[in-house]
Image (cartoon, rainbow, N blue to C red; front, side, top):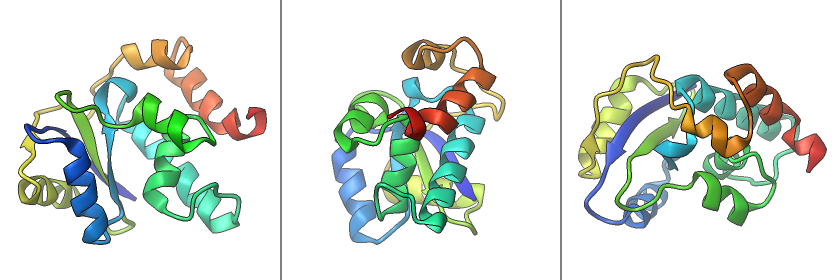
Length: 151
């Protein structure tokens, strides 16, 4: 469903995002500080795919719908402020394609001149729990699943 890689860039992330959009890639960048784990990315991708499939999506673009779910918001600006990639910081490069493989994210990172950061698959970022006001991964996923009902 997705391929993700932790990256850093010496150039503005907005340039990378523009290049991905021009190439019509279903890919985006998310602030590494806002991502709890690779499972967090997977959950947002699954929720985005489901909402697009069942017609309840807020956005027509999978990459924006992904960021909305990841940021637990129905408002683009709020989601981008919360989970959008910040220049000078690490970010997750995320390819949202059913056929995406890990090597695809690595290839795209090379094409975009992004520095790849070594990261364990099981890496956990507890600061993300604080950002979303929850105590554990289960509560994070529950809050994600319910955020459109509450908003």
